[in-house]
Image (tube, rainbow, N blue to C red):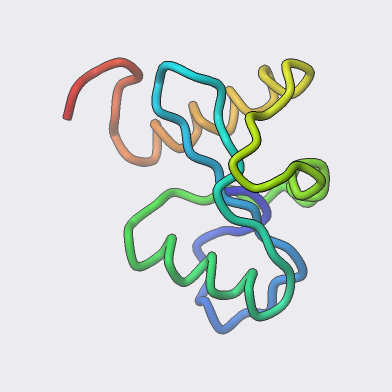
Length: 98
């Protein structure tokens, strides 16, 4: 969800990182990559209406985590802001069942 926005997937990305948050556990890194892999991450997000936010520093930090690794407590607040942004864009309410 980081280091990308809603620009066309043909735009070159240096880095993209996807997070998954189940509402109960800490968010996890579910995908990360550079170049063509970053483009594929963005394409999948766009195709599935997943909100994205561009934040190069956060993407760089999150890319240092292993796949499926929970984010560390030091990043909770920053990632919470990203998740809140995603909820806002989606029109969702945290904790509400859809």
